[in-house]
Length: 78
Image 1 (cartoon, rainbow, N blue to C red):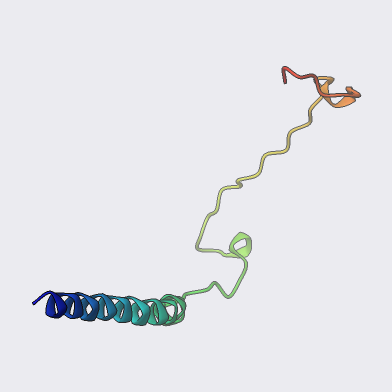
Image 2 (image 1 turned 135 degrees about the horizontal axis):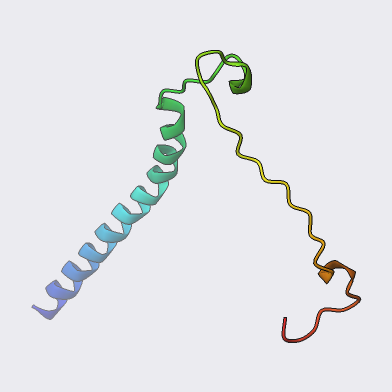
């Protein structure tokens, strides 16, 4: 009886390992195929020149004149 249980456990272990291995082989193909099958609607004209879509600018230009850029070293507390 002990021999049968050990063999049965080995069979289940190998079955789980085989299913896991097959899943790991197939998963990258599913992930790589997802972006290809999804619908893609790209604009044919730049959004800034589009007459129907009004895009607000999302740009920030910052000049740092605090003096921290002229330091020769960075202190330990910074």
